[in-house]
Image (cartoon, rainbow, N blue to C red; front, top):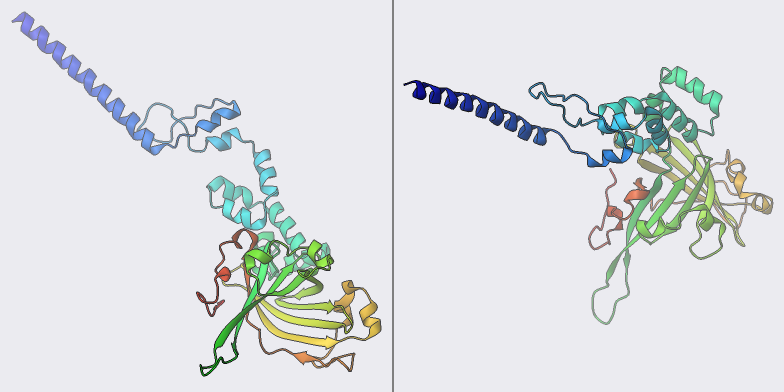
Length: 338
């Protein structure tokens, strides 16, 4: 009887100990699914053992925000300062700490002063206080601005009747061409008409091509931005110099996007020899105050173009390869920019 009672006691003790071990093992297994392992943190040479965020677990495990504890705030701030405003917007969606760090007004002040550098620091600060309550990020989102991290593209199509062969019906062709514009914060912009796709033009849409005299050269001009109105002008050199005047209205599909431009007017006019011999850097000052039908060369009348006024769509440089504007005419005969 004494041996039997002792055996029962041993079995009960073993059952209790086994239950505790199974419970501990189940907790560890659950923690492996709840906690993200980050083995690359060992590269920092910092061994941090924070307490676990789960109250049901008694042992410390790897914390999901260990990268923040290993990366100093000063270094994180320096990394964010090198990013573009649109990249900062994506980074703010990563975690709460990054979002609070990116809301630092220093980032948005620098972005605003670069975007509207033509207005000057004093004028920008006045607009900031009067219209945006001193918040730089609000100014960046709500104030119209031209984007410089890509191309504005206008896709235009028209129908051309071909030549008849024999007794067959006249063929009809759909012709597609593009207008490309790239803006710089300094008040300069690049312009090109081409039948080439976006992914091909983006490779040479730069200042070097604008200065060259090759067949793929890009024309350079000046622009001004007043609220959401854009005034631009380009001087076409040659035996009969011509100036192209462009008026656009800036808008966006969502707040702060600024990814659309409506083409209000497109006028070509003649200039005299004195105006043509001047620097093309001041062409906008030459045509300032001109009427729509005004020309300074009687041999070149002013022509207001009514075709090819499709709105411009903004395409970032990192999306030029996969943009739908690269599709051929047989796959997209007409494009609605929205």
